[in-house]
Structures are given as C-alpha cells and as structure tokens.
Length: 423
Ligand code: GDP
Ligand code: IMO
Ligand code: MG
Image (tube, rainbow, N blue to C red; front, side, top):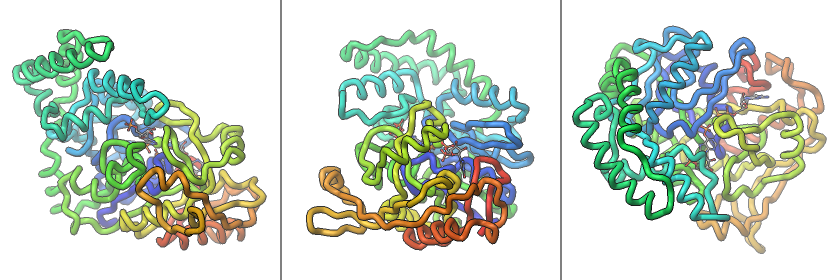
C-alpha cells in the first residue's frame, strides 16, 4: 500500500477508526497528525471494543509502528491513561510500537479550564466543545507560548516554563472567576507523566523519512472531519486544527508529493455532535438511530445529531481533500428505512446552490433539496460480498459516491473488522 491520507468527509465520527484498523493490515506505519484527545475512534476486534483518543488505531495490529506527530496536541496524563487502558485490554504499547513527536504541543489543565470558561461566556452561542482544552492549546501554539513534549522531558527547563505559564493563566482564570491552579500539583503530575513517556519520544519527522527510505507504507489517520476544519469548516463551530488532507503533511513533516492517495470516510447518512449548522438534520432519523442505541459520542457520550446524507457537503469535502476513494460506513443503519432522502443541493430564496456558503448567516437560510431513494429493507450486517448486497443498497451507495465525485472502494455494514466489503 502506498502512502495514504484518510480523512473524515463530514463532521467527524464517520467511522475513521474502523476503516484505519482495516487498512492497517497493509500498512507499516500509522500516523496521527492533528487534533488531540477530543477524538474518539471506535474499533471492534473479535467483539472487543476499543476507543482510541490520541493513539493511532493502528496500535491494535501487531508489528505496526504508530506515530503521534508534531501537529497533535497531547495531554500527557491522558496519554499515559490511554496506554495503561490498552495494556489492560491486552494490547502491548512499547516504544517499538508507539512514537511521540518531541515537537507536539502539550495540553495543560489551564487549557481545559479556559475552554470551559469560554463556552460558559458564549452561553447559547457555545460551540459545544469536548472541553478537552483543544482550542486554548492550539491558541498557545500559534501565539508561540506553548510548551512542547521536548520541554516536558527536560525537568529543569520544564519547571521554569510551566511556572511562568501557570502564573499568567492564573491571572486570567481569576479574572474570569474560575478556579486557579496549584503549580506544585500540576508540575508533579506532569513530571510523572513525562518520565513515563520519555522512552516514546522521538524526532518523528526523521523517523518517518527513514521509514519511507526503507519502503514503508504510511497511513495518515485523520481526526475530526472536513467541516470541523479550522479553515474549511463551519467556523466558529469547528475544532482548532486542519482536519483536511493538508493537515497530514504539516502535522507529520511528510511532503505533499510523497502522498499517493486520499481516502474519504463518510457515513451513509450524516451526524454531528456539538453546536453549529447542519442543513439536513432530521428528527425522525435521529430518533430511529438513537432508539437502535447508535450515535452516542465516543469521547463525551453526548447524543449525536443525525440527518440525511448531504451530498453538497461530501462533494465539497472531495474537492478540498482531493478524495480518490470513498469508504462508506454505517450502511446498515438505513436497513429499515422505507424511503431514503439525500440532499443534492440547497435552495436560498429562488437561488439554487451546489456548495456550502461560508457565511453562517447565509448557510442558515439554506433549505435542502432532496432526492429520494427506495430503501432495501433487508438486513445487511451479515453481507461480506458486494455481489450479495441488496440491489437497492448497492444503487444507493453508488449514487451517493457519484454525487460526491469519488470512487466507492469500501462499504461497511457493521462495527467489526469483518463487516467490511471491498467494492
Ligand atoms: P470515528 O471518530 O470517525 O473513528 O468514528 P466513531 O468511532 O466516533 O463513531 C463511529 C461509530 O460507528 C462507532 O461506534 C463505530 O463502532 C461505528 N461503526 C463504524 N462503521 C460502522 C458500520 O458500518 N456499521 C455500524 N453499525 N457501526 C459502525
Ligand atoms: P473524531 O476524531 C466529532 C467537535 C466538538 C465541537 C467542535 C469543537 O472522533 O471524529 P473541540 O473540543 O475540538 O474544541 O470541539 O468539534 N469535535 C468532534 N466531533 N468527532 C470528533 O472527533 C470531534 N472532535 C471535536 O463536538 O463541536
Ligand atoms: Mg469519533
């Protein structure tokens, strides 16, 4: 397998973790290049559930190298917890299987407190963040006041820098009426995590280039989704990193012309968790999926908002990411629906749009134009061969791929590894 970037084509939770796990079979290295532990990637292997937040989903297959790249923001205490959690479930995580970039930025408790305070201040206009401190941590990175993994593993330097950051942030937190932080406590906990993580820390840019020289195939595991991208998403209802394909290059140090393919993952319908525009949102499909016990967030447990497949959104995702191949997940979620709707354009007054307006006030005026497809009304979760898929299901998946403008490569009919059909 060549170097492949995998991105979410909607608003996150498209099933990226599951598809990464499937594709990892033919990869040597799996890299996370952006986001933090706001991500929640669910993988089922032989009935055992794993939820990955910072560690690439490739960790579940033996003999693969997983890399947390420079573009990720890392909460070290959380990362230690994730390593311990995986080991308890029998997954070995060693410096042979996991590398942590020395230039990845760190998330601190003041980032989480500021995230919470900013959400409170926004009131009903809140973003609905995961409260993991992601926005403030990326803010510090861009403002050039962030601390990095290489600081964490140099105790003397770390102490001085953290002291200054806590002093400044405590002033802000105090002014906001929020609880302030005790330097000693934070320092002790972070130093402990730093000692634990030190063996994993590498110059991951050099490591990835050496791996490529040795002929390794690399899989870049996107977090979040195209419309949560800081530049291309529904700003300000977005996350704070570039979730689109370009983010894989800047967040890993691998050049664009070394990338061979972009895979877009999308659900056969649409979901979004958190606030923000969602033109094809639909109460009926939401209720149906929630009643089936589906579509609850992997990180925060919040019920995801659900709606019909929006081809305007995925077409734009194909454009921004340069998607070659599509993996469509959760096709089985529509097994019982009689008539399936697909948003094929937006109407604004008498105008028709085939793209997402950037101005949210304009987007709020958009009324979806729907096409209808007959449901297949047959269970698909046991199908393993494209030829055996119900004809109406095949027609639907082909149609939404064509509307998106990329090639259908994978159809997924359940959360398990084996519930994957190569088209
Ligand atoms: P990610 O963040 O993109 O990795 O996606 P999440 O793990 O947050 O959410 C996707 C959910 O869909 C998880 O619960 C997966 O186990 C589940 N899933 C993925 N593909 C399928 C599928 O084809 N069918 C069903 N029923 N569930 C799926
Ligand atoms: P995965 O990788 C879905 C959403 C939050 C919120 C917005 C900003 O599992 O697809 P943040 O905490 O990042 O500042 O929140 O982004 N969000 C996600 N939604 N899947 C995710 O990750 C998400 N990560 C962040 O709900 O709307
Ligand atoms: Mg998720």
